Length: 169
Image 1 (cartoon, rainbow, N blue to C red):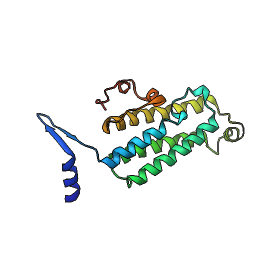
Image 2 (image 1 turned 180 degrees about the horizontal axis):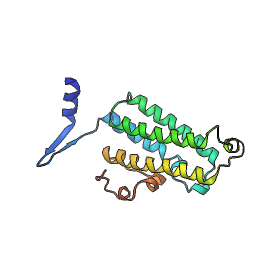
Image 3 (image 1 turned 45 degrees about the vertical axis):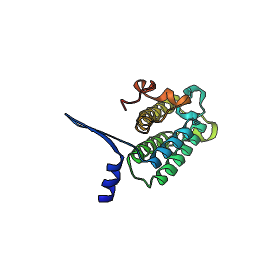
Image 4 (image 1 turned 90 degrees about the vertical axis):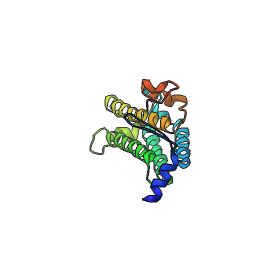
């Protein structure tokens, strides 16, 4: 415990009051993992392409790959720390998306697997919810680790986070 406190105190770069305040520097390993993950997610169209331009089957495949990326990043972090909490939230959002669009009890499940069709309202709702969760968490991660979000990922960030100043997060 004392070693962890020393490590945390070593990253502390400021302190303010009357109410409270502190600033800290993220561990370099966490920042590297966050930067690498953002770069990989920039190429995942399922997160930002217009919904009508996406094939449900390809979206499912892409979300499965995103889950693999998140698992790999969590393993690098040894499943600990603030970044790991955000990655677990992203993994949960991905799993919920897959649970909704791959329900084996749903009579339309076979259609998703054979023809790429899905009831549009169900698919679009699941996709929108996942994108919303990703947008919020990626904005927080980008702000916390002083990283830039590029490409289509910017489109899923909350409006407040789309400016150059992510300090609100």
